[in-house]
Length: 349
Ligand code: SF4
Image (cartoon, rainbow, N blue to C red; front, side, top):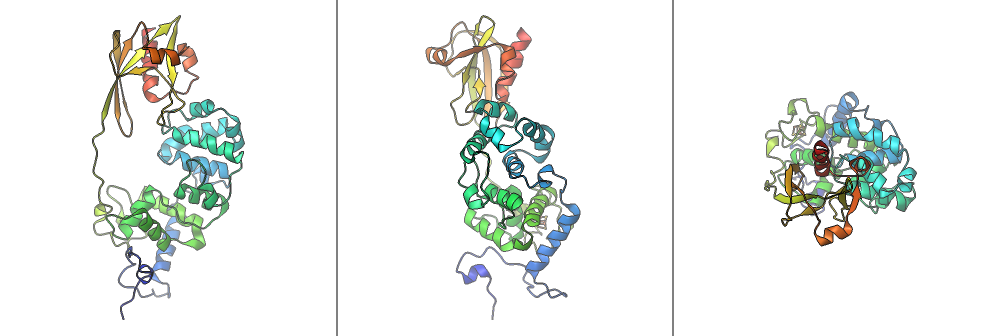
């Protein structure tokens, strides 16, 4: 009789089984157990054990690393942001006690500032003490399902799989799937998961994705999952590539309005850069002297700004503007484009 896998028995869409040869190995281990053992051995030898957030059980330090790593590479976080941030805010309580502006200033350069705003909200909601379960963590601002599980697993020992970008890519390939819904991906993650060694499993999957199962040119020859990986013969086909969207270009006039050696700035109310200070921008053309141009690439658009020295600001902008010297601006949280504008202003001084 043909065997059915767990998904077929539950009449759910099958995510793909382990290799067709489903017999146990010489030691009597099932293919599932063998895969877990192989990944675990590989991780013990090759894992990134020295990452600072793996050398601690402090929930705040683990949470901070997870949030910083959501959109930023490990190397950048390690070299430029993680330690200075911890020096400035050593506990979640200290985050709760700071103003949002202080938080944004410490986050400057990391981008995706909603992460900092949510960190601040979470610190205040929890009064500096994180809950211990993934279920409770997931209810906090900016903590999605995978991040909640990662914090619960790494800080509090909860045995749950995670699903970050690296893990997703491995699952697509391992189960030879070009497309999958979120629900299916979670099922695949649970199917492979080693609950007995949850911490090591989750870290190992992240390391495998970052070190061997790379988006381009995965190193299948070195991979501990190679024997069981169904996508190994053509890993580049999994997952199906996303259609690349052309990045829109936003053309703006960036207005430099000076008053007694100080320049007008506005505090952003937009979700994207909320809380950051920026030079006033206008799509329409107030008259003024062109001082130069700045270009800033963001993940979803490119800003092309023309710097205009103006005698007056349009009425709605004038009402909201506050004036700062270039020295004072050093202490304000500002985005990359506005830092470039500031440099241009300084070069004119
Ligand atoms: S065998 Fe290749 S495609 Fe499969 S998980 Fe390993 S590196 Fe990725």
